[in-house]
Image (cartoon, rainbow, N blue to C red; front, top):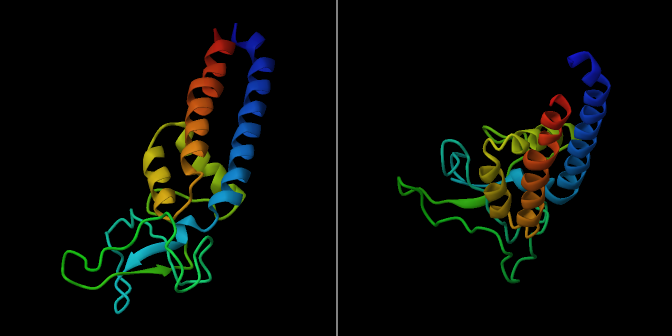
Length: 164
């Protein structure tokens, strides 16, 4: 009966919120400024793609987490192509709004919880991981492998076990 399962469901919901909060804090600490870097035309401010799907790893911007001082080797992130499809020059810039078109990001814990929930539903988690990898974060793959393994395949299946 559903009434008998309510106390167990409350426990599972508490566990899911704790799981989401834990990964949101980890994502906030690891990827806080990953969505603040993008390739754009310096003259017009137009991003490389209409949906701002690609990030970049800045080499000379001290505001960008993980960036290197001028003259040192480039980080492990993506470099901007020299020109876009229309022939306009591109460079990696720091933008103050870290919002992607379809992802909340990890600027704060609440946005991180929303991003973790989106990844837990397996809707666009690879795009989130690739965007963060473009910004030079080397721990994105282990983070998202753990998130995708434990999120949908372990935590969400607890709901099914309780309801059955």
